[in-house]
Image (cartoon, rainbow over all chains, first blue to last red):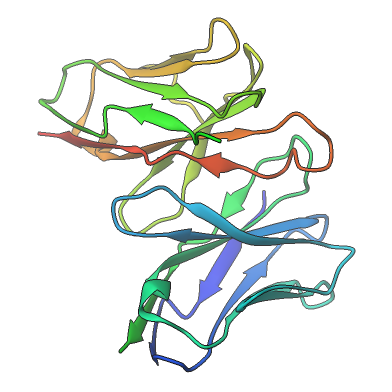
Length: 112
Length: 116
């Protein structure tokens, strides 16, 4: 099955700087790649997703890039704010009725 | 639009006791998922329903776990008897019916289970 790995496990950034989290996946047939943000005591919240027919997608301060050849995709957060502090999970699936495989998560800490 | 609703939010039980979790998906979402999230890990799928049919339950420990979604809306996940290793957050998620966004899963707040 699909195996998703995230790096680094913990990332600390100064407020206003950018944060980048990278995920690698193993199944070349995967075509759907969402990113979730999870705050303490809450469920994962979808923040952005990308499909394999697109190389990059942006939504305000958040962007995701996909490199199908290298089988990795990255989350970019610009102008970080304290409320961006959370655990971020990447996931991958073949889409449709196929299972979504999650990474172990990255703890992002934004230092005011 | 109301999100996925789960109850209870927290549950503490002693080992060997039964426990049940309830989920109400987003209105109109025909696909419902139950996940288990261990501390420091990502969610892992336990079971997926399409309407009232369980279409992927290969990772559900069937000796002690059971689930139902009788009318294709609400769902209940049960553990009987609970073991120490079942301590985790149990998440419910749902997906809409339309083909364009059916991959998108929306999660509830979860139920944190502690087994003593």
